[in-house]
Image (cartoon, rainbow, N blue to C red):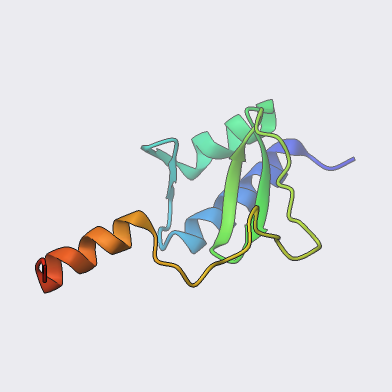
Amino acid sequence: MSDPLAEGRRVARELAETQGRVNTVEWEGQTISTYEFSCRYARGEIVRIEHTEAGKQVVISDTPDRVVPNSPLKPKRSQTEKPTLLEMYQEEIKQGKLF
């Protein structure tokens, strides 16, 4: 079994690097030291880091796992060529009332 504090230090270093920092990390709107982050990680306050397209993101402990759909998203209704009500009003404003 690995040392949780050592694992926390590794995670803190990685996070600081992705944030462009050296000895601090941005966490929950605050700047805290990598040591404080690693202690919180070891205590279980910080549970996991998810790798996303935006980079590594620390996830708050009680957040449910991210679910990414495997199939393409399907619209609730089919598209029509008819403009929406908002588009019709915008067109009227641009052109002015012709009649």
